[in-house]
Amino acid sequence: MRRSRLSVWAAGATAALLAAVSISTGSASAESNGGVRVMPLGDSITDGFNVPGGYRIDLWQKLVADGHRIDFVGSQFNGPASLADHDHEGHSGWTIAQIDANVVNWLRATTPRTVLLHIGTNDMYGDTSGAPSRLSALIDRITTTAPNADVFVATIIPRADRDAQVRAYNATIPGIVQSKAAAGRRVHLVDMFSALTLGDLADGVHPNATGYRKMAAVWHTALRAVPGSIGGGTPPTTSPPPSTPPPSAGCRVTYAANAWNTGLTATVTVANTGSATVDGWTLAFTLPGGQAITSGWNASYAPTSGAVTARNVSYNGTIAPNASVEIGWQATHTGDAGRPPSFTLNGAVCSIG
Figure (cartoon, one colour):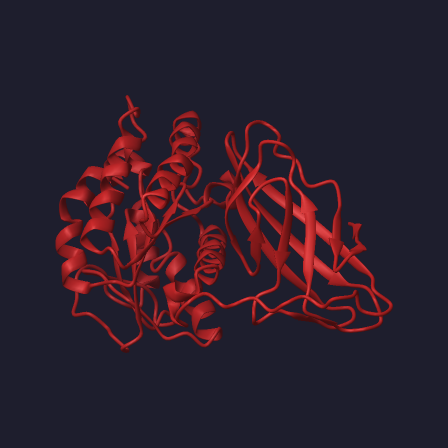
């Protein structure tokens, strides 16, 4: 963020912060391990103001733990030694327009496979009505310059002093992303706002360490929902469900959702409470009227509204007794953001807890 606008730091706190940084900040020669190129793109929240490296620290560690080889790319460089790749494209104090004016050169220089875009916090001053159109233009520029890249567009995190402006701006982002996706662009919505509270901010604007860890978890989930974005080729194929329910079937569903005025994200945990392993599964449920799934992860969904069937994908078709799988989806709604009234697993009615 613009430090003159957003943050006033005492000299002692600044000295302590600088002492904690083990890797120099600013531009540097790119680090590359030959992995999938991922560009963290945005302002000081991407840079990691307060916590050098920001969300990139935990995101890197999560992706490595998953077995992915990732190459962060960008003209900027910072973070601790625990972050093995310090490259990024986070620019402190920059607005959407400033990113837009430079992004073509950055994309051509690094050719990312995936872009993580969190931008707009510095646009939340005065008349913010033009911010959505600027974001739309930026997404168009990115997808035109890098048409084969997956672009993950995040709602911006809360701000203590601009709550109404942030909420109004974020409310426009799902529609922008949907319009790009409908036009064939590889654009995905990420609900970052709902993941953090004001308690996760160090100064009312920038996350503290806990807030950055929460951001990393959200990016990680979003990336895993689009397997090709972090390596692994095309999305996994589905396995056919069994023709009959397994013996001693039993299941429990836990449902959680984050909703905003026109959309929501839902996370569903399906537990096998029976005595036999479930080998291939379908989870059936009916969405409330006005809800429609726009994207999902860890399952295939058809149709996208009304009575929906979620089918396992290749890597999660088996649920052992007392084990569970987690699936989820993003949806639009017209006022009813409630959960489905019931769920059945391979025909067996699940308890809801």
